[in-house]
Amino acid sequence: MSFNIFDIAGSGMTAQRVKMDTIASNIANINTTRRPDGSKGVYIRKDVTFRTIYEDQLNRGFSNFQSNSPNAQFDPRTGNLHINANVALNNGVLTGGVEVDEIYDKENGVKTVYDPSHPDADEDGYVDLPNINVVEEMVGMISASKAYQANATVAENVKTMMQSAMNI
Image (cartoon, rainbow, N blue to C red; front, side, top):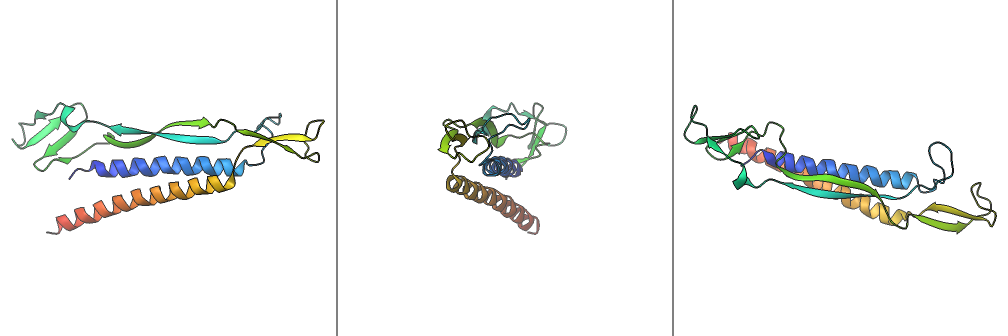
């Protein structure tokens, strides 16, 4: 068993938290027609993409760690020490998981509605608003929340299994 499962689950939790924060920002700015400096400008809906982090276990460049045991291997590039049953001490090096690749503006981010009473309406009574659908955002929020929960469950289950193994 490798300790990097915690890195993988943790990276998934971090990525899903960023997605939830982005969705919350979209919902909070659903009627925003001004920039932070007060000038006219519509908030554009944001979305998140993820990227897989994967390092091939066979290409790490292990060398025997002769000073301790013939069954131990030390990888000087990552600082991982593998003893007997491939137990990895990762020393903060993320060797697998997911990370946020980009937070980007969605296409078709503006919708025009007729509202002559709006302070930012043009001379014809039309105002540009963010093209944000609350139902879509809530579905994304629930999906990200469930993925976060699944990663937390994985980490908890691995922790429980490791504790049980130590009690044998």
